[in-house]
Every structure is written in structure tokens, then in C-alpha cells.
Amino acid sequence: MKYDSLRGTLIARLPLLVTILCVIQPILDVMGYWQQLLGLPNAVTFLLRVLLLGASLLLGFLLSERKSRYLILGGVLAALTALHAFACLRSPFGYRDPVKDLSNLVMIYSLPIMTFSFVTFFRANERVLPAAQKALTAVLLIIFSVQLISTLTGTDPHTYSMHDLGVLGWFNWTNSQSAILSMLYPVALCFVLRRWPDRILPLAITAAVGGAALFVLGPRLAYASLFVVGFGFAVFLLICDRAKWKQALALTLVVCLFIALYPISPVRRRAVIYDVRNEETQAEIDEILSSGPQDEGGSEPSPEQMETLYRSRDLLCSMIERFGRDRVLEAYDDSTDPDVLRDDRRAKLTFCRLLMEDSSPLSRLFGLNLTEMTVWRNDGEGELVSDVFDVENDFHGIYFLTGTVGLALCLLMLLGVCLRALAALLRRPKLCFTPLMGANAIAYGLALIHCYFTACILRRPNASIYLAVVLATLWVLSDKAWKKGEEQDALREEAAP
Image (cartoon, rainbow, N blue to C red; front, top):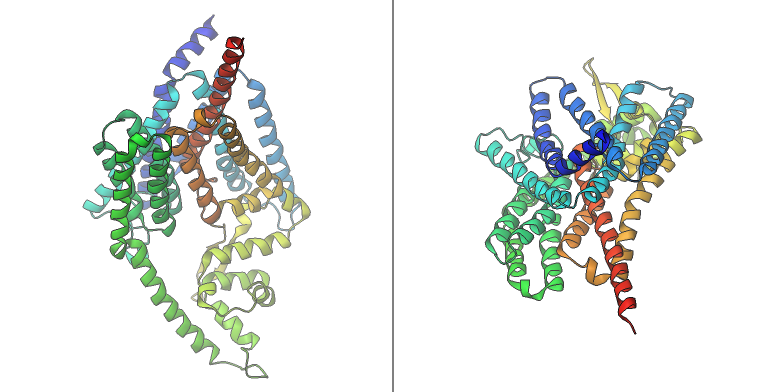
């Protein structure tokens, strides 16, 4: 009886608990920023995130009517961890700093754990799903407020600090913020539409706030997400209900405003700076290749010239120190293109690919040690500096850190939710084609695009928690469509003569 009473109390409090769980995330992000800025250890915020993850898992397990699924999940993650650790132990590099490496795995495991938990929460109490959508809308407003306050107080660190460009707010991870805002934006539009279905102004204001947050952030993907959400949700509204044409028009006009502002956007200004830097890099390349020992034929740069050129780039210098000149030049196909040589993302992917080639077959299956992706080198002035080659693409990062097996499990979960939603949509289109399903489908699609082109989503709990809400929402809505459709079919059969 005590267990049933406790379970009932927890289920009744779930909307509040889920709201707190979501709203506290940007607060922890801001705390983490100030801790780093003031040189304080991040142990407090890290511990809080671990406690929230553990509490969510425990609560989900207690409330779930299908506890075997949690046990299976725990078994899979435990087996993957053990095999990953064994692969690192058998690696020719040894297993350095296992605590840091295993802590990174915990962050990766946050997405499946939170997805399972949110599915349980949504099923246990029907008021939790609307509460979660409301909480994500509040998170969007909090992030925008932080961006605004940091700008007004002159404390914004800027998205691209070297150029004082873009409004990041008191947050540490640009890629995470782009992904987070892209997921929150359509959810917030849907919530406001459901809260004020016949009013245009609240939807237009929300569209302007979410669009402005993405607009001032600066990354190209954030700017593109603004249009995908605005135009995509407007089209979805018209398909669902043509009577919402005024709201769809308001969304379209807001997006067109941001298109008109492109000449003064951080994206445009960054593109100009990038072109200038490319010209400067090309001049540096020409100068290096015109000096030093020439190749015998005289038409191609000599290996010595190429090495000097590549060593002028910090990451490529570390790659040469680690893998040797010939392998690096081969990996880059002896390129002298400034776009290629300045691409840090490509450098990190290339480094990890070469590292995987030198690793054991077990590492290809279960991943590399995160510590191996850091190289220490002499800066030429007697000081040791580190270059971090942890990749800036989530799907690639999951492969390098958890191997083929880990990547397959990740894709199985992500694609499984998508395929289930598509199956429900094809089988029950009238039940599935709703603004709520559409908003979360847009958020899901943008999240996957960010995972492919950027990092800090699948591997960072501060962003993966929002993706977990989106995945759980799509899963539960698909379930409801299937069940309601079956009930309608049963009623038709009973009514049939």
C-alpha cells in the first residue's frame, strides 16, 4: 500500500517535476559558463547533471509498467561500457585517464536514458506532455533573455570571440546552442498556437523571439534553421487547417523580415571575414611554396615545402608529429587549397580516422579512448600546448568513441522513432497530422542535421535532454494514434450490420 501511495503521489507531481527538470537546464548552463570564466571547478554542475540523470532513471523505472525494458537498456549500456574499456585496455596506446573516458560515455548514455524516462512520464500522466511543451517554451524565453541581458550589460562572450561576432549569451557551446534553439523554436510555436488558437499576436511574438535568438547567434546552420522552422510550420498549419491561414501568413512575414536583414546578419559578416582570411591564407601559402628547396621537376612543391606549409597550421603540425609527414600529406592528397587547410573540422576527422587505422579491431567495434584525441606539442617557445582532436560532428564522434556497435545502437534508436512515426502517419494520417506532431517532427529533423554537421548534441546532456523530449513525444503520439485508430476500427466493426 505504501508503494502504491508513493507511486500515485509521484505520478500526480510529474508535470511539476518534468517542468523543473527542463527549466533547470539553461540555469545549469549559465552556472557552468560563470564557473569557467571565474576559473572555478565544474564539479558542482557536473554532479547536479549526474544526479538529475540518475533521479530521472530511477523515477522512470519505478513508474514504468514495463520494467524489463529498463533492465534491457541497462544491460546493453553496461555491456557496451565493459567492451569499450576492454578495447581501450588492449589498445596499443594503453588506457590513459579512464575516469575521463568513462565520464564521457555517461554523457553519451544520457540520451537513451532520458528518452526512456520521458516516454514513461508521458504515459503515466497525460498532463506531463503539455507541461513539457510549456517548459520548453519557457526555456526558449530564458535563453533569449540571457542573450539580451548579456548584450545590454556588455558581458556577452560572442559566438565568434576572435571577431566579436554573434550573440552567444552566458553559454559555453555554440553548436549546442544552435541545436537547442532549433529544437525549441517549433515546439514553442506549437505551444503558443494551442494556448491561443485564435490569436495572431502571441504566435508572431514567439516567432520573432525564437527567430531573433537564432538570427543573432551566428552559425549558418542556425540561420538556415530559422527558415526551416518558420516556413515549415506555416505550411504544416495550412495543411492541417486552412482556417489558420492568418497565423501561417504571420509566420511567413516574420521569416521574410529576417531574410531582409541578412546584409547585417552575423552570418553575412562572418562570410565576409572568412573570405578575407582565405585571401590572407592564400598569400601565406604562396609565400611558403615560393621559398625553400624546390622539387626536382620544379612544377610541384617539394615534400619539405609541403611539410613547412602544413606545420604552419597548428592542428596539422600536431598531426605530423603524431603520424608523420607522409601519412598526413597522403590523407590530404597534398592539397594546398586554403579552404582545406583552414578547415579544423576536417583536421579532427582526419586525425581520428588515422588514429582508428592504428588501433585494434576491438577499437573499431567499441571505440577509442577520448584521451587519445589530445596531442601535446612544443609551441616553439619551450611551452607545451595541447591540440584537441575530438571531432565536431556527433555521428562521427559516436563512431570514434563507441565504435561501430555504439553507432549502430544510436542509429537504431533514432531511426526507430522516426520509422514508427512514419508508419503511424501512413496508417493513420488524420490522427497523426497535427501541429504537435509536425512541430516535433521539424525539431527531430533539425536535430539530426545538427548531429551530422556539428557536435554537442548526442554527447552533451544539456542538449540531448531536449532531443529526448522530442523523441519521447513522437513515440507517444505515434502510440496514441495507433491505439485510437484501432478503437475506431473496432467501433466501425461493431456498428457494421
